[in-house]
Structure formats: structure tokens, C-alpha cells
Length: 467
Image 1 (cartoon, helix red, strand yellow):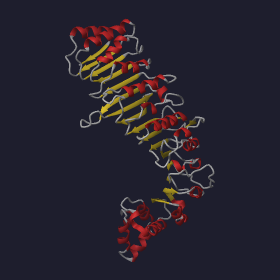
Image 2 (cartoon, helix red, strand yellow):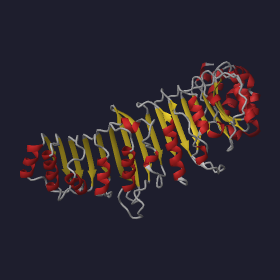
Image 3 (cartoon, rainbow, N blue to C red):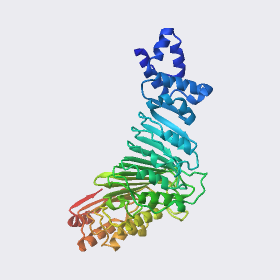
Image 4 (cartoon, one colour):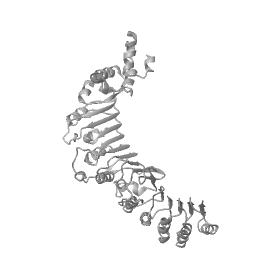
């Protein structure tokens, strides 16, 4: 029996070992660990067993007693009924719902060992308001993965900590909010967004006004956006969701948008309450990076935010749209969205901004002005860009911008012709009583600052670093 416990089981291995002799056959049938491992084995394709699948699955479940086990395939109510005597030992289950009666019958079961549950339904809404709830017990379910069509507050199990929802912006947001309202203990929420091609109703009909939902224990909120055909619909849905849910400022919001050509950054950064992170962000990093030399004009936008030294915001948008102009090489739309989000926030705590623009991205003066005007609390500005001329022009013409700015760091690939502008900016700010304390300047393709200019800078700024 100890030998059997060290065997990685497969269906064929089961047959071979049980045919060695009667003793081996008897012993292997009496080793529940073997059958539990067999049910969980990645080497078995249960769907290929055909007509034998149910009988093999049932016999394996019977022989796994008294240990908890995982059901390796997605099952419907008829198959669940076949193993009902062993349902109390199921630890992981994927359940396919075809009707409201199926869901009601499932919720009436007692499954004290169940910890991980995936409930999937058809494209139509199954969990209707008239669903009769059962009195079953699911005391250990901590992870639930579910499609929007079967969302119902009855799935708000007492031990639930991780919720993964497959939904779309063309479906109603109400069922999701109903479930979240019943899950104040939730710690992790993941929304996998995609279009439901069988739903043709307008999203506007689903944006009902309702009280804000509080998730005080939430640590992670992940949004995976795979919608690219109806970007406006997605933007409204996500923005509405983020404004309907309140969570701690220590929670980490992560957004992944692999097809973001027509998606706006403001969809993921709504500025009205109760969304906390816009108001409480202390540091922000914005990076525009080129995808590959073979794909000119295609970029990835990365936005990272920090609150009290801990990361609270992580947005990744691939193939982001820079501007309505077809040949524009500048991120005007993105920066406008960023500025608009902060300008509409009731308060701002941002003190540090880092902006990293990959080679080939140009930022015009108006874009710099828009961003800096809405961040009066800024104390630290770090920039990497091809040319810093436009930034320095804006700072020179507007010496009162960001009155609290004390640290300025600029790295530019083309550093020629900016030394005089940099010195003028520093002198103008010092003249306005807004002098810098730390200055870093690196021009990769330019001659170093002259000794005379460097001396004048050091007379105005205590800490100067150049290269």
C-alpha cells in the first residue's frame, strides 16, 4: 500500500497495477489516496473515456472514501445526482447550470468539504428574482468562479474570500452588485470582461441608481478587459462599477486591457466618490513603451500608483490610442484623460510623478501644461523623454506651476539646446520663491553642461547631479 501511495496514477496505470494479482488488486482498491490522486491527475483526459466516463468516475469516487476529492470534469445535475451519496466529500467542483431549478436543487445540498466552486450557466439569465432558495450548507467554500447569468446572493457563502466573475458590459450590473452586497468579507475580486453575443440589450437600462456597496476587507481587485468591439459600452460599465463599490485605500486595483485602441484611461480612473485611489494616491508612474521595433506606432501604456509606499494601482493598456489624428505620434488623448481624472477629483494627495516616454513618443507643450496644472501638490517630478524642450518651455512660461515642486529629474535622449532653458527655469522659480532643492539632468546625446552654467545652477539648487 505504501508503494501505491508513491505512484502517479493514470487510467492505464490503474488497469496495469490492479491486474498484477488478486492481492495487488485488493490492496489498490483499498488505497483511497491513489484514487484521490487519480481524480486529480492532469494526465487523464476524462472526456476521452466516452461512455465509460461516468462508471469510471463513480467507481473512483467510491474508492476514494473517506478522503475529500476533486471532481475533474464539469458536471450537470444528473451526474451530480449519481454521486450524491459522496457529495459531502467533494472539495472542488465545476457545475453546469441549465435552469433555475438546477441552481435551486444544487443550493439545497449539504457539501461541508467543498472549498472551490465554479458555477457556469447558459447565455440567458438563470438566477432570476423568483428563484426558490434551498437550505443547503456550504461552510468551507472560499473560492467561487461564476458566470454572470447565474449570479445570485445565495452564492454569498459565509467563508467566501475569492470571487471570480466572467461577465460582459452588455449584461446587467445589478446581479453582480447584489452578490457583492452580500459578501462584505470578500478579499479578492476578479472581473473577466468579454462580450456576450447573445445579449442585445442596452447597457444604459442596467445602470440603476443604488446605494454604494462597501467591501471593507478587499485586498485585490483585478479587471481583465477583453472587450474591443464596443469600447464606449465597456467604459460606462467599468466606470459605473468602480463608482458603485467602496473598498479600502490599501486595496490593489489591477487592470489589464490587451486591446485598448479605443479604450480611454478615464474608464479605469473615475474621479467621483467613492473611488478612493484618485484622491489618496501619493505617487504615480506613467510609462509609454514601444511594443517592438517591428510594430511601429503600437504602444503599451503602464500606469502604477502608490499610497503610503504600497502599490494600489496597476493599469496595463496594450495598443493604446494616442490621438484622434491617424498619424499622431503623441499621447495627447491619454494625457488629457489623465489630467481630466485628477481635475475632477474632490481632493488630491499626489506628491510624486514619474513619466517615462519611450523613443519616438513626443509630448507637446499643451499636454505638459494640462498635466502639471491639475497637480498643484506635486513635489517630485521625474521625466524621461526624447526631447525636454517642450517641458522646459512650459515651466519657463509658467513659473508658478506646481508651487511645491522641490525635486526635478530630467533624462532626455536628445539633450542638445536645452541647457539654457533648464537654467532659465531654475532661475525663474528661485526668483518666485519656488526654488528647487534637488536637480538631476542627463542628456544622452549632448555635450555636458558648461562649468559656468553648472556653477550658476549649484548656486541656486543645493543638490545638482548631471551627466
